[in-house]
Length: 348
Ligand code: ADP
Image 1 (tube, helix red, strand yellow):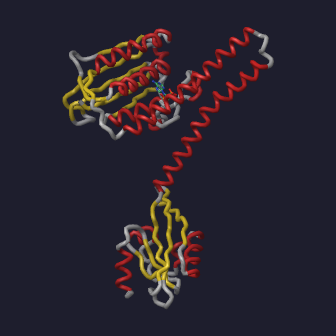
Image 2: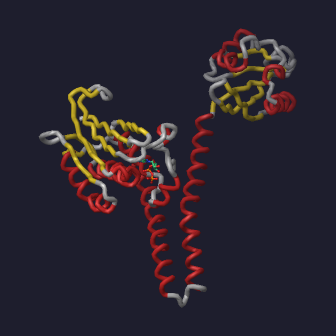
Image 3: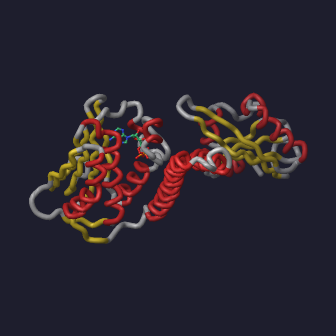
């Protein structure tokens, strides 16, 4: 193949690509390859350009065996790491000397790597979260079989702890299933017509006993008249339950949790008609370093307190996915020592 055609061929490949012939020089490279490896790479020896040992080895192997090879190339542009899968394919009858040349293509697989890392982290987190209560349960079963067998008071106390631990596992499995369901439905727009004020009133009624036990005054301020929107009432109830429960659990020391509803014809965030539901507590607040990661699965601002209160670390992750499904937004503002406000913005 004439050189011009070869260069044209390489430039049409939709990812970084270059060719090296039996003189061990780069005989063609496309724009993406030049962006990745440097502008003046044509005619240079491949080892001075590719540099990473595993990539040089694979190129040598492909040239020598006149066959395929595969490896990884890692690059860093100063801001982030990118992982490429590099495929080497041998083409006979091209290149300056007889014998052929190797075509190397660099496919960006960073997102694949990230997805599998996230999956591994998730499995590790779930296993850890399940194992903690399971270990406690197994320990108490042993104790009940042995030392505590004849001690009625100890037995009662241990059974109570076992019930709490079993409940914790049950909540975790429940939240995992919810998260799974919400994620799989995220792209399906909800269709139900619902009225928000009534939904919030009944959510607050359900949570009234929890607030009473925590000595928290739970109040609702709504605009006059109905607030109608299209959504999924079960899911929205879950959003407000999680946020109000958090307000009571983590912000209850402030003595109050207020739910405030405001609708507007032209919401600044949504650039159109929307309703804002704010859940305001006067508790200890959340340090700003935690705010960007709060909706990640298993992320806790105060792990000790979350575990003590039986939290799964999944509540806000579920909230975020449900709000995404409704094409809404979630905002968090928090002042240390003064309290936290979660704002749910839903399009009308
Ligand atoms: P959890 O099951 O631990 O409650 P969430 O996802 O619901 O998990 O919340 C994540 C973390 O955010 C909590 O562990 C807690 O540290 C923090 N948090 C949530 N709401 C509040 C709040 N109103 N005030 C202070 N911290 C909060």
